[in-house]
Length: 227
Image (cartoon, rainbow, N blue to C red; front, side, top):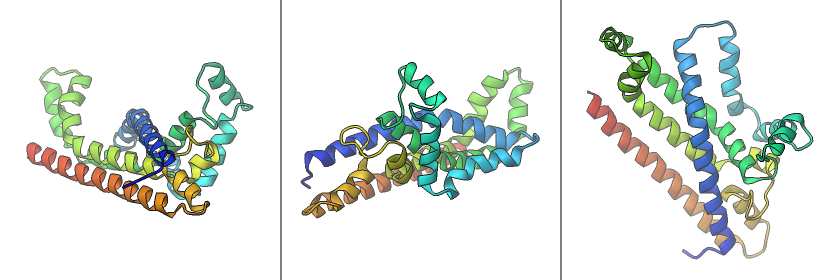
């Protein structure tokens, strides 16, 4: 398969953006999943609605909200820029948009996995003198591993395919924020761009299918080891 250099550049940028988005979002997704699965507190429904909001909002709206919050002229955006972390119209902003859109898909399987963990196993480990952190690391985390892996995989696939929020917040700047979906859209707008479009679509499908198959295989092996 022959792709122009711009297409390979977009693919490399997409992988970079997706990996960073998932790495940053995973600890937060685990914390929110734990909160929703185990805690009962006032306003829990509002937290749950806020977590799932990117799933139902038009992606352009999510991107616009990010732009309002993190533009250089906004207080938060100006503070981050002064700290050396500019987001708007940068690849870091593309990673933020991808992470926000992927977040609900990461939280849900993690939460379901946590809810399936038998609390009596954690209580038994605690009675043996294990600290809460040790119980979580040696009992809870291994039991929820398939759900964690499913969440990470879904988040990565969603981040790879994210378009609306990314192009609204980070635009489509070649070499900086033009990710794979934005590159497909850009090649569709130029004459003789069909070849690059077909190649990028094939790559996107292959990466997504590989991620899902790998997740399924590893999840099955983990589940088999835990039986």
